[in-house]
Length: 127
Length: 180
Image (cartoon, rainbow over all chains, first blue to last red; front, side, top):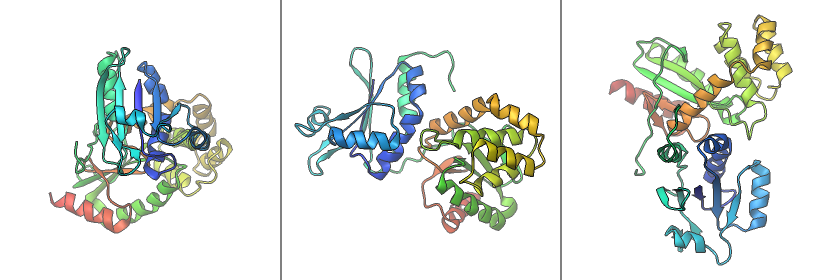
């Protein structure tokens, strides 16, 4: 599982980041991974965002109690009221095998995620 | 990783790429772009201006990064450019696509192939059989591996350029790279 924490629906960097992951879903699936996005936005906001961007992966709402999941991962920004831009790659047992916290305004891309997934699932063919 | 971290191009430029400018140029500018992306359309004009200004010191390379989930025609346009490349007309098609971004459907692509004097049967077959889908995907994945997160993304001598996309900023960074 790839868990993608992002500050908010609609914000400019998140938009680019989710667009890229949407595009890469077949690659993540090829590596036996499911991608989940999560932010403090509520379900209705997520629904509108996902429809607008044609997202094909689930968005989870860390809405009530607000930021509870982000706090458990240690990446909630209480001063701002949203979470860090953070990536977690977990194995089948739910153990975190890789994580990365990006500067809040910087799109972390997907190279780190793909490398972490490949380390978990040895692939015959690498690009 | 820190804020100052600049990703590097993981796939070196080879003859396999679409290249404008001399091999011996001091600076290589690589762009990952999407033919339907309006920012890339503006970047096309900027790159043209830079090429004119910098001249033989610059080698320019274009690689495909179609965001197909946002841009309906981006994939076909990229495959069309590659199909034109197979007939030695990549850059002519590249220019045509970036100057006609609102019309990138298949019938438009066929019309452009006609304008460029391409073998239409061969071109059309390449589109319907997706002959260049793999090549476009390889470009895309090399971009992902190099830290391309959106379009357009530029690399100057293999290092990702994170500055503003305008003529003077890019020329400034190209000048710095040339003197290094």
